[in-house]
Length: 134
Image 1 (cartoon, one colour):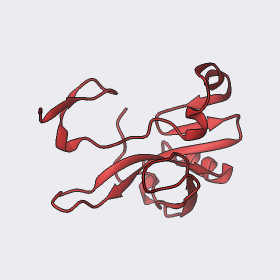
Image 2: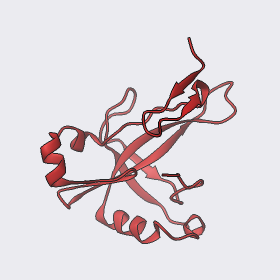
Image 3: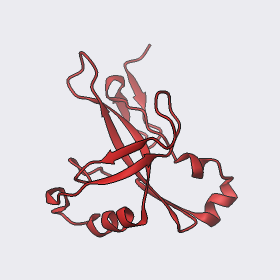
Image 4: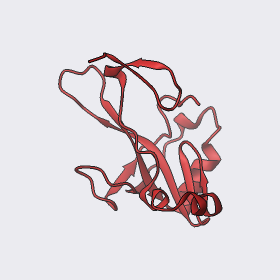
């Protein structure tokens, strides 16, 4: 067994211990055919919009793991309201966004073991502690 893997997103080789689970799309969008997605969805790395009326935000859910220095993070999708979407959009490129303090709610929008679709989540009071690199 190898201690490294090639990332399907960036193509680079990473240590296996650094790998984390990421859910590719919210269930509502994943369920659509490719043709429907192209006509009905705006899909980005961290934000998706369905039919201009359903809004999804990708975030990292930290899970503490015994014996691991940092939390294991799972890339998950939350369905958010138009108001939360607008607030996030307004702050998206703001270099001081991590200093803004606010709280929002979202709902789990992808099925995975232990969490049901529709579970209510609090969304962190900052968009990122560490800005993702694209």
